[in-house]
Length: 140
Image (cartoon, rainbow, N blue to C red; front, side, top):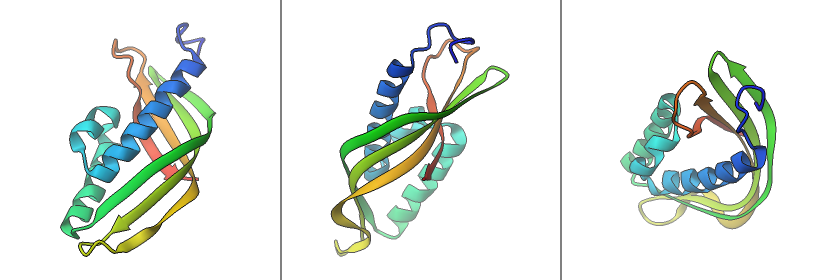
């Protein structure tokens, strides 16, 4: 990445990615589309928005609490034209559960679990905007 962007600092990127991870997980659980919109690519936003709408329709709420980040590593970096993509493996201890309209758990548990996520952030290096946006997310 440094050959394309001389100012790229992997540690600075990882610090920003951790902050984004915490913001995105919290905003997704809260259904906060305003926070999510600038942090996600268009396709990823549509996917998250659809899941939030599904929860709202089912009258479910999600509770997510990140207790700690146990690992944050760069797994891959790629460049396609001016689009840069960096894939991370994020290992975190979280409490994550979905509650039904009656407040009872529908999925997850009120207990700390170690979760591994594979997230890809992308940025158009030809644009002046320095923000990286989440373009893919999956469990790993």
